[in-house]
Length: 295
Image (cartoon, rainbow, N blue to C red; front, side, top):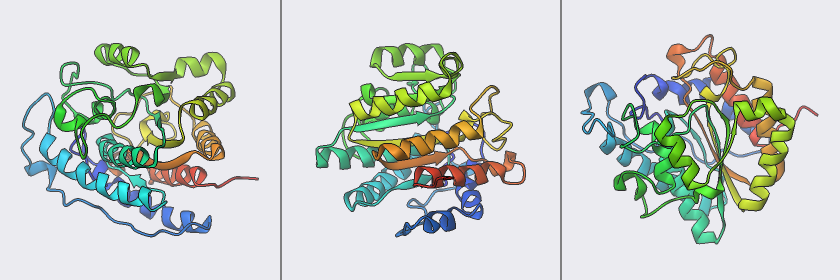
């Protein structure tokens, strides 16, 4: 999903290609999985020639169009018992992934949970967003808060109950979105919480959360949750993030729950990367989530 309209810093549209070059397809098939479809659902115009429109929600029209197309693809895959794995692009692609998975879960009578692994909350609305970038509003809209065009994308209403959303690795929240998150009832394991409790203890709590709150889990992994030492090629790098070992272990433990049905891996920006190491790590994370183990 080579969509980078949702962010100020561009280049993540090349992220899917970088992850493919890092060998993700061979890694997936080497685990015994079959890749049944691949490619980009939407036809996206060059961002440089598009009109940003409303400064409170920039590039709303192309994002809604692209994510609606993605939602249809994800829904079709989920309905066919496939595992939709979406490669971004900026994190606004989660609008499409969660719309498709939310519709599929409702049709199946399943509770959808979301593991949101991100340095940021992405829980702004046009009223609270300092930038107007939609990648910072995508999860709020998926939970029913914000612009109707985003909340009602693909199907009317929220796509996931915020009480079934769990954050890991959060360390940069805007004041308005923090208050909205508290009121919505999401669960947050910030970097401070990880430092206080230790990562293994947090992992147990995350697994217990999803066993209690969901039948299906969608993992949305933003590479900026990692410390820039391990993932320099991402749009908003922040110090003091997860290590590569912690992130790989998190994916392995989520796979062990048996609940994960779909995933996004987003915000790989090759323009900022060093020898494609961020894309290589993204491919490794996907393999762990799909069942790879060291022993």
